[in-house]
Length: 261
Ligand SMILES: [Zn+2]
Image (cartoon, protein in one colour):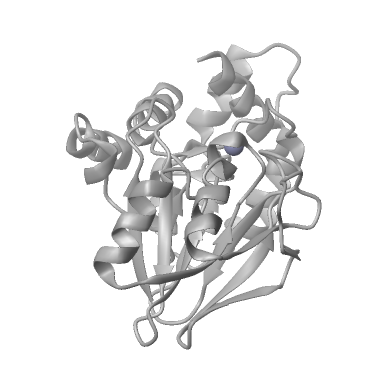
């Protein structure tokens, strides 16, 4: 599996991806907002884009579809219920997206950022998760545009947390520096987050490192719901929480604090 990360360089700091089969050169474009750049890279690398997949329906993920389809005739794939025009194939949990001969991606139904959100998991070879706006480096998607923080908690607890620590993460945006600062605001004693911030602060999205799920569990406060520092911090910051909040209550509280932060 060949992964080309495309840094859009816009104010929303989007990442697009081309996922290609090394044998056939067939490629899947994930959320190709920067359509010209995606097409240019495909030409340069000798890829044939045969499929487009949208992780969810937000404009900054779907606005490049028509351009890529016009240039390549690619098939558009999206969640069963996503409100996206021109979708050729609707997918849900467990569906497979085959790219050429060597790449098989498994669809995960991952609601929370929106209620119709797909993550793609590559299990073969170097395992990878294309996480859209569900999971970011050191953070979680917001739930303000059609989402639900309790659903996002369930997605984290039931589907993301159990992933192997070696899975490499390819998110839909680069918010790593801001998210690390939020983690450190919650957990000033987090040495891994401090070290990572020192390494990445000042880097552009183009140069941001590819992190693993194992690293996320150290630096992403939304995976650190059992940390005493995180729990006591949310209890101090928000009214109405019980003395010993549940993991779901801590997660939803963190999402509230991140929205205000
Ligand atoms: Zn979004």
